[in-house]
Image 1 (cartoon, rainbow, N blue to C red):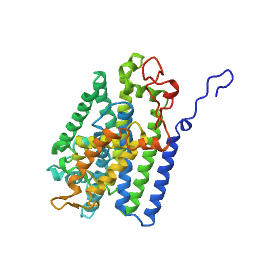
Image 2: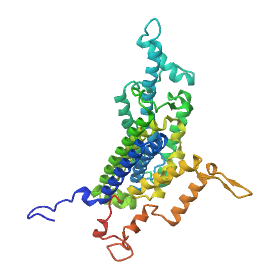
Image 3: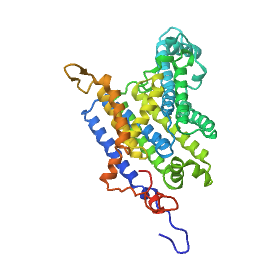
Amino acid sequence: MTAAGGPPRRRRFLAENPSVLWFLLALALFTLGFSVLAQMGLVSTSLVKTMGKTLCLCLVAVAMDVVWGYCGILSLGHMAFFGIGGYAIGMWLMYARTEIIVTNSLNAAPIPPTPEEIVDAVGTQIFGVVGSSEFPWLWAFADSLGLQLLMVVLVPGLLALVFGWLAFRSRVTGVYLSILTQAMTLALALWLFQNDSGLRGNNGLSGLQNIPGFEGTPQSTISLAFFWASAAALAAGYVLFAWVVSGKMGSVIRGIRDDEARVRFLGYHVESFKLFIFTLTAVVAGIAGALYYPQAGIINPAEVAPIASIYLAVWVAIGGRGRLYGAVIGAAFVSLLSSWFTGGGAPDINLGFYRIQWTDWWLVLLGLSFVAVTLFVPKGIGGLFDLLGGRRVPDRDGDYGPDKGAWRKEEGEEEGPR
């Protein structure tokens, strides 16, 4: 609608993207319903933690969908940012919890301990497993929750900013960029595996489920609080990315995905858009990791190995890339199914001549599913909603513009954060 003598009014964001409201409603109903079941004792604490971790995985999957499904950057390193966020919060959790234990123990001594003695004792407790007792420089802010929370955002963001600036300014694209992101992840994982990395090498950080200051609080209450925090983070992240991929910015990043050279020819600074998306999604991945690992209880270098980022890409592909809700569906469906198969929930199948044990065959099944979806259902599980909702994809073979298959303006406006 146009006001007399004025510019056309902009429709409100939620009015243009009703799928966001539907997602938030579904997430709210699920969170409330599951919380009621947990309070009634109908679901176990371990299941509450599993669902909370699943919500965190959904959040990093949405970030992956934005960088890959919308911007066309197949990053095989976003789980590295996820792990960095986990390590950042894990350092404070380990330090604060160990400090409480050491202080209580030393206070029982005839002579009260000095602050230096407490720090030395904490260092011995944390790093004794790797034959050290001194705090590495990485732990300079481990005693401050505020600074470590800042590291959750800053470290993944700065790493993505530097890496993206070097890669995008060199105009590295396609499979070469994917290989570079995978190499970055592998280098980080190999460094973390070393005992002198300052993060306890292969042992990683453990006991993260014990929140300092809440020693008397049952795990059922703590797990439910993290479940709510994970749901809130997913809701906020979904709205943020839905806003990012809508409007003019959304059109530009989808244009970069479809034809980067043409977008550059139109005068847009492609590298800036790609760098913004890459850095923003890395920051959100770090936040998701900071919520995930206190629920998991432990983080080690295997969590940031390249295979984890490949799994993330598989989740998005199965759910349907280019659809925010598709990423959520894919991450939730595959991760929960993985827990069921690898956790012994799926019964073994005895063929007489061979016994199929799903703990061994789950990855094979996942790989076959990925190939099948790629070949036969390229829109993934999320594409089913197009059929159920009666959404018709325009026929691009008609005479709709200067080029064969070009979309008309009206059709282009149908694109949004689906």
